[in-house]
Image (cartoon, rainbow, N blue to C red; front, side, top):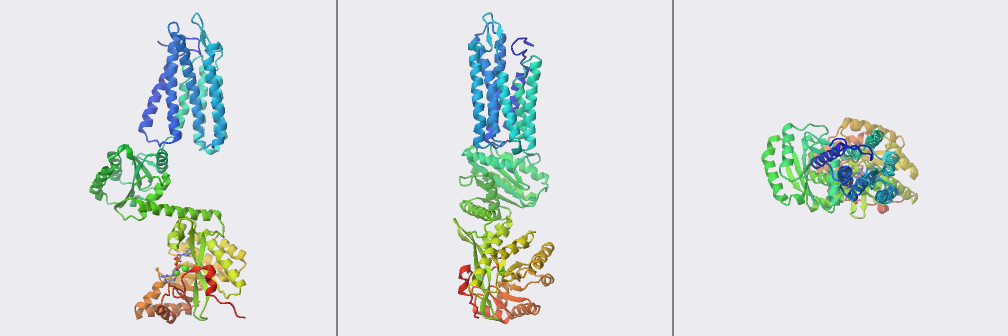
Length: 639
Ligand code: C2E
Ligand code: CA
Ligand code: CA
């Protein structure tokens, strides 16, 4: 038919709308086949594309009817013009609604933006409907001519575009600049195309101009980093798919493969592994998605309702894995878990799998069970509480408890020192012990704040007992080597002691030997700095690791704590007793005091006394007790 030269909105040719139809098909194919994580924003985006597709159809039908206006009933002409314009408005309204998610608007601001936009949408729609009736806008006259009237469309269009622009500018700080730029630029291009159309008295590209922002959004927001070699998407995409599935009540199956040797950032996968992974991911389940959560850690996620016989499939898959795997000679751990109601977030499944892995032997498969989930949730709860304790920075936090174990001074035969030992008391778990929480606190950088609380509470107790007239030489607290790396360590410790008003010498710090040279340097520097103030230092757990005497001698410790293993060794045979005794004697000669830990029986005590002990500590004298009960062991000064 070529160019239809008509007077309405300029000349029209269907090229623009046909391009839109073609592009919508391309979008559909892309969105179906590329991996895009499902989300509310993405489902809204799909709706926008669908309305775009409708607009192009309405536009084509309207323009065809317009040419045939001599023969077709005018009602259809008006109907399709209304559908055409209203669907364009609707897209703009959906874009405004869409903005809520990437711009992270709260419900209130969103209401302020979307209510006026809905009203505008209503007004525009109403005008489109009444215009042909009232004669204000477009209608066909008695003699089949076109009456243009006032075309309201550009007014409505400008309102929506300005609102979108305003949102992008007002909220630009909330999104990556590149995303804002991409959307802004494409919206501008659309606007320019419309202007160009008007200048050239053309109306073929009205719908096509809407394509540009759609491209920008698909590319900038809904594309996921895809690893071409392995064919996997990243951890963030995994979290999104799980969050979304949970929201929709869909049960997923997660199969995690950890390749232990490749669990290092940037380490290359061997070619054969890449092929095998792609094959395993594609061959067994319907619609499985592969995620590379981190290097060497792959998750295959499957919708269980699409694979009702998943149990058999898992067995088949693991069987062929067993047959094939030995040839790769790489250690692995496989964890399999379904999603469940008690764990909601994708992030927590990564945590659960990590947790399950820590208790799984190399080259085995573990299927997550109730106990794993129970323990993981407990672990997670404890960690969250520890984080909360550290965030609140309350030195009197009641969740951190100080227990202490009195230490017997052999020379005076009295208890005048003690060791402070940490306990954590939580609502859901009750009291928990250091073997549970110290490794967690160390791993997550929380140990220093906990130590400061212990130090504070210990200092307060020392002050009280001094005021009450007790003979209290000092209490030692345990400090992890990690904490010393903190530049503020000395300052923090000094401040806490100073604010309690007790002499620095009433506090001691227990440290264990460090393995690395750099930690040793740091330790030496910190000890020397705090010794200036008068704080005492104990070497803890002597005899448990590889002791480096040269290094120990370089550090000005006051007391060497011999571990219980040394006490046990001395019980075993005379030769060992002699050796431990000599070691202790050597330390004593060099002005270190020797403390034996873990003295449980009378025999233990006898040996220790023979072996140059100055202090004794252990269950024989007292189990760790709450700080308040220290008065049961300590004596008041007689003066
Ligand atoms: P540690 O510093 O060697 O503390 C001595 C541990 O031995 C304590 O366990 C104590 O209850 C236990 N013990 C005392 N007497 C005996 C005995 O006669 N026989 C035996 N078999 N054991 C005895 P606890 O309180 O469970 O603490 C374990 C470890 O946790 C501590 O070992 C220490 O390394 C760490 N820890 C405790 N509190 C803190 C703290 O405030 N900060 C840091 N960084 N670590 C702490
Ligand atoms: Ca200790
Ligand atoms: Ca110890």
